[in-house]
Image (cartoon, rainbow, N blue to C red):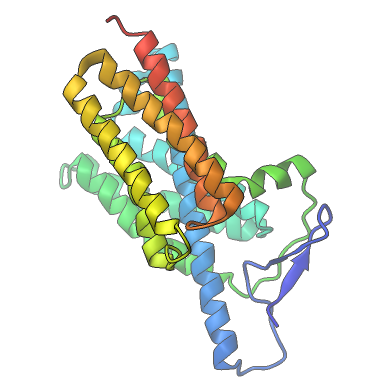
Length: 299
């Protein structure tokens, strides 16, 4: 049976991010497969936490740089690389501590974030590589460094964690949090998306439905095709109208799709509920940003 741990603020058991040591020195193939899945899941969570850190903290650095008059200094490649490593480290630290990883493992993972960039600063300062190579190389070297740290600590037992109920509730709403993080940059500089982006709205449901084979129910495929026809028509009208009318139609199209998401969230059909939650929050947030852009832009 898969190892689980209990949290002091919850009556539900959640999978441990690391497999606990057992008395059996030769684990079965099934146990080894579970260990590999846990390792891959842990690395995937770390990647998402790092992206979340960049999305959330990146705009804050820009605002702080502008307010303090150090925007040019923050834009220097070597500084930007270390700022990016800091953003990823903050997101990774929050994610690992929430998953009850010990501080030594968190510290080593933080080192894995910084060392690749620090190593490449030497050839960058010497003029051997450019800024793009610095950023790209740092990210590429970070991957094996993260894997080494994760493998090194994969058998460690978790530490006891007592979480606030509000934090637990927010963590359960992670699809909504990811959706909001994706719109942080747009709130700083509001704009209107292209009308063609509305084709993504019904297309996502059809693609996921085909992959999950959930379009075979009574009337399910017809409903999805009807939604596709509606948003295709709205897209074409917006393209032909152009200007401010097109902007309002695009904002309306994204906002209307939030209602589509809500209906599917309640029904639990076609796509996972996590996807509908993510999509619904993203649709509302983007529609609000576009309305703000329209209202703050001269006709």
